[in-house]
Figure 1: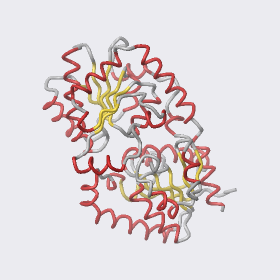
Figure 2 (figure 1 turned 135 degrees about the horizontal axis):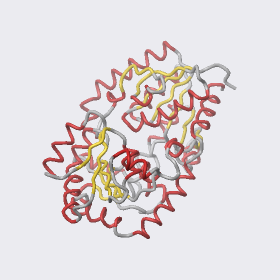
Figure 3 (figure 1 turned 180 degrees about the vertical axis):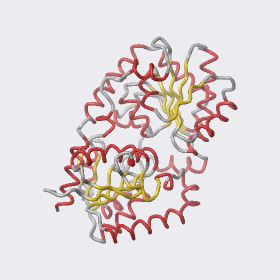
Figure 4 (figure 1 turned 90 degrees about the horizontal axis):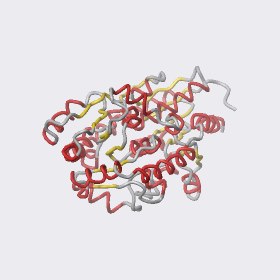
Length: 381
């Protein structure tokens, strides 16, 4: 087995990748205190001693039009990073999600004799199944978040292991509701709605207006409701004019980051589809999932989708355990109606919480240990 502290290169794109990679690096640091890590990442990775040669925001794109306009810059970064890593020779490269960027880089590094892992199986079971061929060329091994994924990948000749989801280890089985409310200045008896419109600028522009208008409708029906909205640090200036335009006069408590405090404190969340919906499930919170894309992006996406669900809680449950209001269905009236419906049905909330407790146990696998075991085995081959 691996005896020396490894030198690991990683690339994580966007806030969700930074979160997963930060949790992975914490496990690597605990196992190999002298390990070093470098590449492209964000603040959660930096907190674990990661050296970011480029910030993860440079990889953030939203939809095909944005990706096309940014393509020359992204290709330059990928080429420069590949050159540097082939010269520097890390013990392993770990691509964290961001398949459109990482697959090409992993393929080049693997051909150059560097061991490659991909952390997060791409959603080939949901859309773009042809990517499994690229993954087979790119990765020596895939670290899977969900239990059904390794068998699917192995059918296509891809080495893989289920390591669980690091969020399931990080989030307590019993959500700290009272402590979170105290931290946010909320009272125990308040009814609280958490608004999570996404972490990217383009997501906020597309999703926050209808979410804000829905909050205004809810407040008119139930003036005592409290609203909290976690915002990625630095994006409050983007959110505030949207709230003023679509929910004038509504008191929405903006909090810098701290989405876990908002989810622990709330009674229900109106939330953009993505990793945050899994976080909400692990906090055992009822939710209404929503999403909006530019029209052209939406037309392309809906033609490529294999499943009737888009939200991770529904995909993992294989049924609509929470409502999804996507694109044209995401009207303020529908969002408000479905959100308030959770507050009016105690038995429905309790049944959902039981489902989410079972899901939490399934995904809680001591990801840091299993992932570092797999990394060590790949390096030792």
